[in-house]
Amino acid sequence: MTKGAIYLANLGTKAQNDIGKIRPVCIFQNRMLNRAIDTGAYQEAIIIPLSTQLLGGDYRLKIAKRERLEHDSELFCNGLRMISVERIFFAQGALTQLTPLEIKAVEQILYDLLGCSL
Image (cartoon, rainbow, N blue to C red; front, side, top):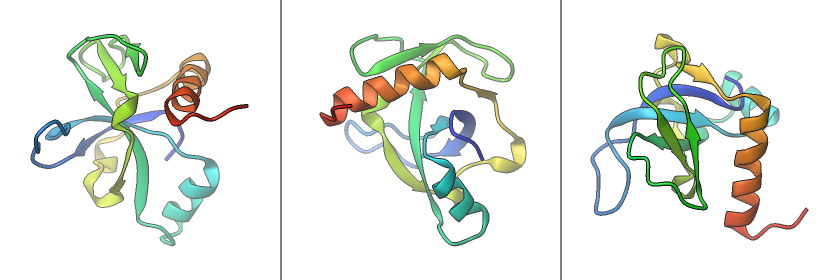
């Protein structure tokens, strides 16, 4: 598992304004957390869901379809959440990987969203 990898995951039944169903999600956590999951010490991953509803806005980043990501999508950064790794379809392999520039753009969005300063 690597930061910026996009996999399919089951986000469950949609509740009110939550984003649900089986959909692409982007793993967005550091190497330390990834290692903890790989060793079995931790069982949840920080993810950002993707949506094919291209609405734009300050907290979304467009990701063009490529490799196994079948549709143009947006990272729904204000949908940041933790899910059990059992909900991520690792066996099917990653759909694609964010580029270094896309990772930097997501980091900036998250800093703004969370009110962090550099």
